[in-house]
Length: 66
Image 1: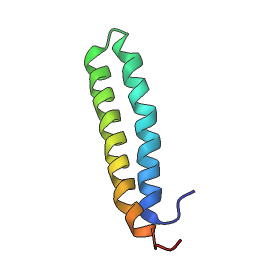
Image 2 (image 1 turned 60 degrees about the vertical axis):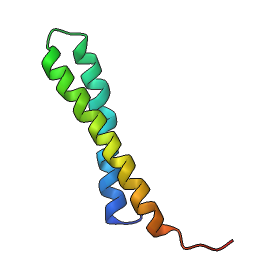
Image 3 (image 1 turned 90 degrees about the vertical axis):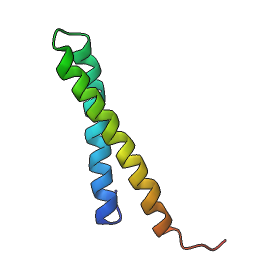
């Protein structure tokens, strides 16, 4: 799925963030509110960081042409 090491790292981070964010939202509904907030913020941070990373390395793959 990933063509190089950077893509693999950002893909793994995206999957971890995609799992952590909803887990934090579920914990927000339960009694452990602080841990839920921390997981939610960490999940959003991972998703944003992986999106920025994908945008940055995408430019390296594009070689032009028609």
